[in-house]
Length: 142
Image (tube, one colour):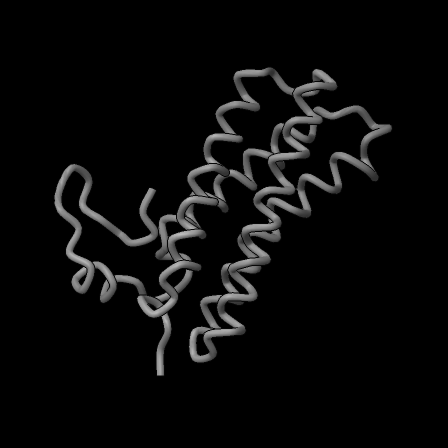
């Protein structure tokens, strides 16, 4: 999973694609995280009422936090340490979301197949985050 806007099936021109990224919303990783958070929101509507203040709240919060922290990281690209700290927060929230997904499957609130699909998306998100963390120089400004 890339973090740049690439041409499907074609070679990725880092400089050309980087010019196309104007905001955090242009990042594929952000788009995947946002879509996954919305999927989680929709499926969590079916969780039992007794989970409202525990699993439902936690999984929604952590999935949304991935997007929010990525937006903050994007705006902190002038400062390597701040940028990396927010990306690390994204990574932690992504992993936390995966834990809540496992609970949702184990409690039979979502199907194993649904859980696997969303879990896989978070593996892609984590992969992209690790690439950004390992190569912050590709993203820093100023």
